[in-house]
Structures are given as structure tokens and as C-alpha cells.
Length: 407
Image (cartoon, rainbow, N blue to C red; front, side, top):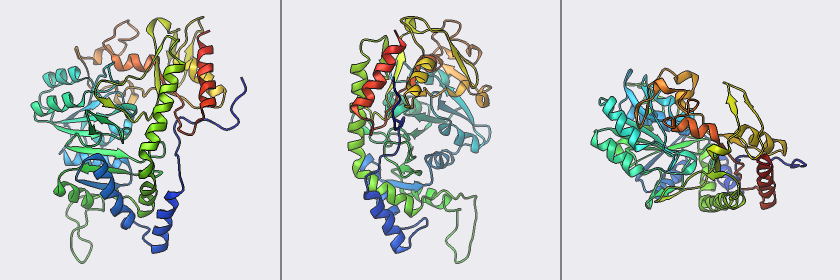
């Protein structure tokens, strides 16, 4: 099959032209740094859209998560319960403050943090007072249950909604559930500023504290006065202009992503695969369309740290084979996020499944156990090209290539 002349990306920025209007305004008014009308505007309209009172525009979603970890009071040596199946940006800010991530296994129903495993983790580590939860690929799990468990144990909830802007659970928007909530405007997100993020809160004192910390913790004095450690984390007015131009297109982008998900769902329905799940009560933003291969349709696949091998079998396939096939026609897919407890940097950290401490069972999937759910999803799953500029014809060819992998 001939490759696409122009590459089909996993999820690239979709620009509309309005962004340049606000970037030019920043240029024309010479407000190019970390203050200006664009920052003021997005700090007003985005919290309104999500359902929070205050938003602080920052240089990255990771910066927002770092500020949230500081707000939660994490000190060196403190354990923090973290989503296991996520990008490392969720977890890294915990380590910035000297905290120790404790990874909570995933549930099949949503591919997000398993509330049963979280409850088990509190039994094992009752001293923990912070829970960091990420929404995977724009889908919320049973977040109300997560919060209920956390509150029962007097724990603070940090919501990493970097991938889920515009999604909701039982009518409540992602980014409004936790004590401290974070979103991202990275280049591959549902709307973008090329970079940037925002911390969201209902507490004015918290918002003001983050504004201070993120501008080098400068005191209100006529000279540069500093009484605590600060950070250069504030968003620029230029980046805010791009975000400002993107916000009106959020619902359009979500609609386009939903159509992509539904076309995959229809086109792959005759194969032994399933799309990433949408739990009851969740309205995702469909940021990435993913699939998981049925266990009895998995051919043999072995992954090392940086390479993978597989043995082709008629009627079966594996993520490595499918990703290679997609790549051969000049389209971009990706493996599912490799769970944090499998990462070399975090392999000595605690890991909790719904059946207890799972650190001793890092080879659970290979041994035939389903206790390590995140490892199983990583082993059988992959992210499909989900760019909202992809045409129906391009997506049909990608679907055809996937079918050929099972022939």
C-alpha cells in the first residue's frame, strides 16, 4: 500500500488564524512578557468554562502540577499515591519536592486509577495525605469514588486533567474535581498554546500564592525582596494569545475527535479488538483513539527497554506489528503509556494493585496473572492516529492496514 504523501500525525496542533490576532495585539501593545490582556482574558474564560473560580496561567502543565504538589504540602520523604498509567510529567513534580510516588494500578473499565486499588493502598500506607490522579487520553474514570476515598482518609486530591480539557463526569468538567487542578496547552493537546498550562482552584488565596511562587516569589516591596523560594513559571502574554485564539474552537475539536473515535469503532468492529473504554457517566474529549487486542488474538511479543520483537501468527497481531504497519504508510501511532512502575527510574517504588502490594509481581502478566492491569493494557494496547485534520479517506486506509495485520 502506497504511503501517504503528507504524514498523518497522532495529534498535531490545529490552528485557525484567530490566534495571530491576539499574538499581534501582544506585539503591537508591547506586552510580550508575563503580564498582559491575553493572560488576563484566559485566566477569566477558561475557569468559567471548566467551572472553577480562579485560574493561574503557567509555562507548562508540569509547572502547574509542581505548584499543586507544593500547595499540597508534600515534604521530602512523603509518600504520594499516583496514577500508574500516565505520562511521567504527572509524577515528576512529586519528586521535585522530595516526595516518593506510590503507584496505584489501573482498572479495565476506564484505563484510569482503580478505586479498589486506591482503597487497598490506604490500608497499606495509612499515613499518605496526597493523591495525584491523571485522566488518561481524555477520559475520566470513577472520579467521584476516588474523591470519596481520599476524603475519607483526609487526603488532598491533585487532578491532572492535562489530557482531558472539555471532558466531564456526570456533568462536572475535568479540572474542577480536585483540591488543586491542572490542565495543559502543550502542542499535541485538544487546544494548544504551543506550550503552557494552568492551575485551577476555587480559593483566591491559593491562586494568589501560585501567582507569587511562579514569578520568583517576589515580595511587595520597592526592591527585589524574597522571603521564600520562587520559580519562573508564569505564562507569557504571547503564548496566552495563542490559547485565547484556540478556546472558541474547543467544542469543534472535541466533535472532530469524537467522529474519529466512532469511525475507528465502526471500522474495527469485526476484528478481535476493542476501543479504549468510555465508562458510564463520562463524556470524554476523545483526545486520543486507542485500541486493545483481545487476549486470545495476541501473537507473541517481547519488549525490552527500547526495542520489541514479535512472531507473526495468522489471525493474530500485536501492538508492535500494527504500529509498524501504520508507520509504513506514513502515519503515526504510539504505544500506550508505559506504566510508571515499569519505568527504570521508578522500579524501586511501591506499586499497589487491588489485591495488595504488587511490587513483587512485576512479571505478573508474563506469568499469566491479570493482577497487574496496567502492564496488561500496555502489552495489548496502542494509540491510533487521532489528528483532527485526518481525512475520512486517510482513516479508512489506516483501518485497512490494521485489518491486514490480522490476515
